[in-house]
Image (cartoon, rainbow, N blue to C red):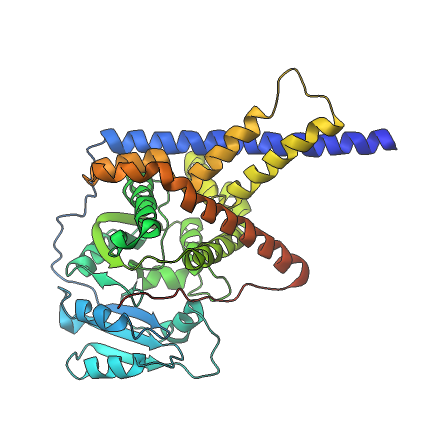
Length: 422
């Protein structure tokens, strides 16, 4: 019996080492491949210079909970959008705000005919997913576009987001979000680096290689026909955007990333705020992992490489936790067992470093800085471990909460990101 238990624990240790080593290799090869591809490719989005004869009707949804610091800037920017006014509706969803959000929106409504306001009741379920769920059933336009209340969209961004929907297979589009407060402090500068790598290289490579760009839930357009065909909007997950991405993927719709469609946002300026933001993303992302990993791998609509990459994206926030567990296992393994012919601590050490790289893709950031013509920002790369450590701890905290939810039913609530704009 003792030998059986000993053998069982050995299998557990080796399973941790093997799975972590496999994911480490996949993530590393993926990052290098995408970086090299973007560095050398001359491909660009085929939709950059399209001009439609008829622009589809669009409803822009802007959830807003206590956004008096930023909502006026957002409305001002949207009043300058280059889109036919007869085909455009901007609907601000006042989500139980107790500040001047409603007052500011109502003032703008008098001068902006296409601007509408929906006030949620005080007893409504908190959170952006629920706020959108309240109104999206009444949307009659062909396309729905999502903005956050702190966004400052480029005047052409709506046309840029909508244009690819001329392809009947494209169910959603996603633009590039650029922080406007990059130079505030070290945190905002490091977030800017991560954003560049994620958008300029990772998202763009996935789009150009016909893989699965992720619909981000903001600065994105969704064809209402596609949304309704996959079951409509859901509010039962914190990462409602990732959930929609995979429902579209499994139903045969594609997502198009548009690096030229830009919008400016406010990055968190305090470390605790950043930690909570990443934890919320990771928690919701892991919910989608548990729900969609099996169906993605079994999908018969897609090629093997498409399924593998879509699965890897689902594992994004799990991998750092797994690499940490693997590193701990490497320290405990020699206490109970002799090492095989090679010292396995090498694999956990490498996986731990790539686990950091997963949340802070150094190769991709280097290429992104080159493409954005921002070589001076490379001086911050040695400090990237600071924000990646925060992200890694947030991902581990989120996984712990996911496990508690499965065991005890406790779910992480919606936690609004603090605004800092003056």
